[in-house]
Image 1 (cartoon, rainbow, N blue to C red):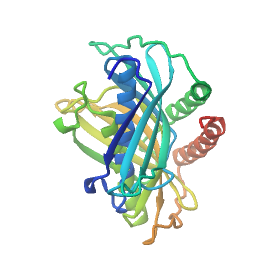
Image 2 (image 1 turned 60 degrees about the vertical axis):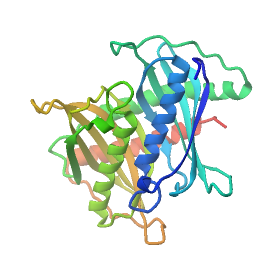
Image 3 (image 1 turned 90 degrees about the horizontal axis):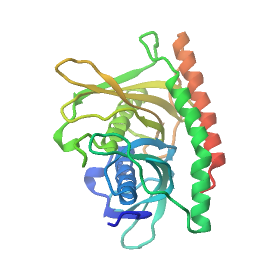
Length: 316
């Protein structure tokens, strides 16, 4: 693949091992595919190793079924000095019919790094068509909104004073989690986020039949290394009529010391389903401590910010 490639598509079949508890492909697996397609597009443009820095506003608009033909397309839409904004879409459909329908779309940011892991310049990007100019304008318009979302998420306090339901998964990052740079693949981390949130949603609803409908504000702060102790903490922030807003923090560090540092932070929304796959009312949660109330209000603020992002989205 030559350097300067603007678009790249991965094509494959959704396997039985990709299925979640609902029987369809899990949201975590789709997040893995998104990261792989985005990474391939970023490397194709930069011509060198890249790291995932941010994933925003992943809305799962329809399920991907096991056996579907899947296309995951990464398309460069903007480049900074060392960063690349990649629009990623995932479409799927019955391979016998040949018609694919979009399941999700999101904007990702990758950073090219040198052999020492420091950001390094990438080729300048200039739109060549009206469509590419619209994509770039939309990406640039979202920069300030994304900064607001990151600031709002970073300003929150998560302590033992909160009484909200929470789940913590702890394990070692395995060699099978490695990416091409020797660290844990960003898509794997996003799958862990989905899994921890699913465990919490299952515990709260008393049913494993819950699906992710949104994942956003996924901010990668530092690399996660193979052999590190990993802690994935999911905490319920807000329940709606049929939704559960869950904040997830990923921390990692040397198991010999037990000192863990924040690796990734994200917000993910799950919806409970009945046996027919229809959304049902979520069990309500009422905040009781000051921290609970502050985090609930924070979740409501993020809902408004996501609506602003959608309003600014001009990508066709």
